Image 1 (cartoon, rainbow, N blue to C red):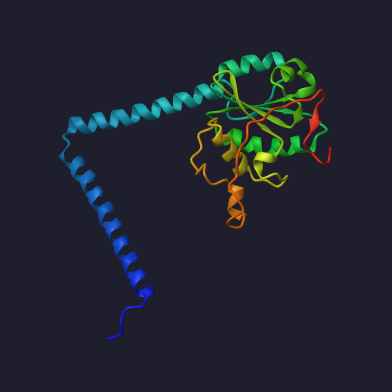
Image 2 (cartoon, rainbow, N blue to C red):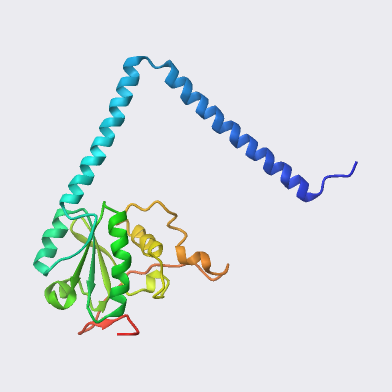
Length: 226
C-alpha cells in the first residue's frame, strides 16, 4: 500500500479540523436547545419580553435619528446652522465643498449612499465659500475636506482622496472603511484591510493614515480637473 503524499496528509488534517469544528457547533446548538427546553413558561415569556423591548428601543432610536435629520445627505445653508446640527447628534460627517471642484461631486455620490446605510451618523454638506469663519476655525484650506465630528468636537479629517487609495475611482466601501477607522460610523468590516488594498500585490506595503495639518491662505483644490 502506497504511503500518503504530503497533499493527502494535509487534506486529512483539514478534513479532521472541519469535522471537529462542526461537532463543536453542533454541541453548542444542542446546549442552547436543551436550555430552552428546560425553561418554564414564565422564563420563556420573560425572554420574549426582553427581546421585544430591545427591538422597541432600536426602533425608537431610529425614529429619533430620523427626527434629527439622519438617514439622508443634506446641505445646510450656513455656518450658523452647522453648530446646531453638530450639537444635536453624536456622530457627524460634514463635507466642505465648492461647486467648481470635480472631486467634491465625486464625494457627493458616495456620501449619499452612506447616509442611507449608516443612519446612526448625520451626513451634511456645506459650501466652504459661504462659511469663511467656520473654515478658518477648523483650518480647512483644501477642498474637498470631510470634517468628522463626535460629541460636538472635530475628531478627524479626510482631506482630498489620499486616504481613499489616492484615486478618483475609489469605491463607496473604501470611504466607508475610512469613516470606520475614525469610529464615526458603525463599521462591521475589517479595519486592518482597506478595500483598495486587496487589489494590490503582496509586499506593496500597509496603508497608513496620517493626521492632517491644513495650512494656507486660500482654498486649494485636490482635484486635477478643477
